[in-house]
Image (cartoon, rainbow, N blue to C red; front, side, top):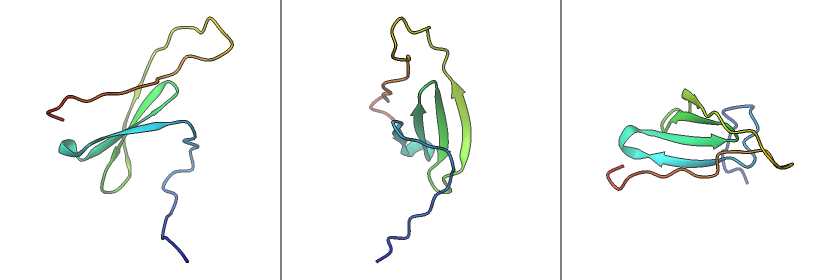
Length: 73
């Protein structure tokens, strides 16, 4: 049995999460201190938005923990 899944990037996305924007035909993936934008059809990276985070005051590093979109997409 093969479900025809193939890797499109070698990068490790463990712990990352996504947000789809169908009206723009893209999806966002938040990973620690950046948001990567991918094309929904080709899965190719379109852009990357670096997020400047504050220094962590504990042993856990700061990271992006959420994204939201408006109702109008």
